[in-house]
Image 1 (cartoon, one colour):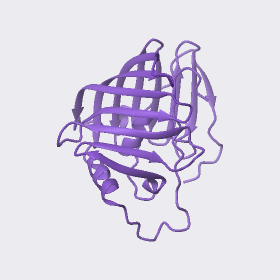
Image 2 (cartoon, helix red, strand yellow):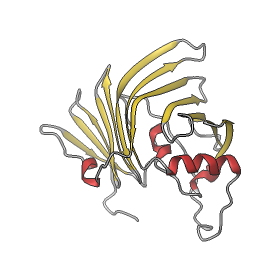
Image 3 (cartoon, one colour):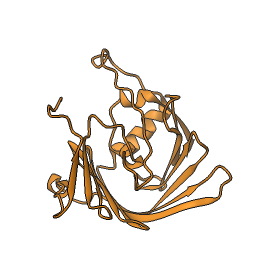
Image 4 (tube, helix red, strand yellow):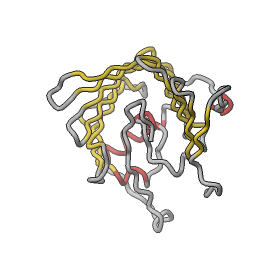
Length: 216
């Protein structure tokens, strides 16, 4: 769908018939979930490097990201090509200035297409789709259970005894690896929902892929 940036699809299983039942999470998952719950808001610069199966760097990009739980974020890639992936809590917007086009999809209808979204989704039923191993006090390996997912595993590293995310390392099933390094991380910035409202730029085409009827 989004052709200009590398997006990773997290296939999440929402348990429809058992949402009222108690869900028991194991120790590592509880520990990771507790870290994520302490993020609330997040602001940082990022560097992304993509490596092929021979560990040769094939792509690099830089940008900024801001996040507000629940479900609001701006992922702004600045180089080598500018683009913006943004959620206002209901719609995901992808803006490509080069072709002057914006694509819109419902957040609830979308597969989660960016690793930063793992920091937004903290419901117990979502974590049933992952196996979590705690590699150290501040590092967690997340294996995706769905064999059809493009992502095989994700490692999240935190600053010691903190909710500050320092790195995301993502391995896909084609042998590629992506490393996201965050710097100048700030937690607790007093963002408001209005900060994540997307405004369609002038002279830009809208590819609106949202269904005509919104389903809650």
